[in-house]
Length: 294
Image (cartoon, rainbow, N blue to C red; front, side, top):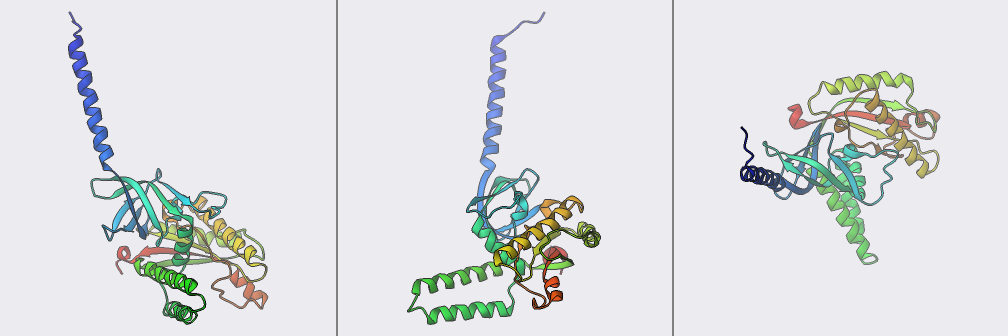
């Protein structure tokens, strides 16, 4: 005969609630927020440089939310999400540490203005001697005119210092493959003759540990600057969409597409042939040298 014992039932319920409370408290204790600068992206892993750690590994997954918290970038037709997490970008990560002391990210937040600067840095990956010389020349020119416009000169100098600092903080990458895609005048459609090359690049990338795909769109200098900037972005988006949908490249392995406009012209825009060469998207497979073993 079973006898119902209220006291034992209550005691068990209290014990169960205590265990749940302790479990929740333990989980909450692991939640943390970290701020730092992205110095590398290797697939689902992201490396941050913080005030407490030179290389903190952050784990990204399908549930990780990456979002702009300040400023308007015009995120285009779709949310950039994880693809926006490019080297050189200052971020704030919220999440919890796993057993390997890696920070598993729930959310990653960044400013739109910081993303724009990081994409410009990412476009070059490392400064050339000419770029650094130009930066120093700009500082000198600003200092010469400091009497006329002291505040502007100081601001420009600080911008150059900060940009150079971010260059120096980025890990170096190897380029493992490149495919250029050319477009018709005013067109943003990927022609069929380039699709097989993009698929081959995607397959090549998937064989490489820790690969990242970089997509940069360009335009010829004909037309207005605003139109060329728009075309370069839409061309990069078209290639990215093909790599994602047909090439099956995970978003965790793609850097946000960069609109380079009329920068880095590879041919003279005074001829039709030159303009055709400048209307392009350049796709690269990037691998952190530490992973590549070089």
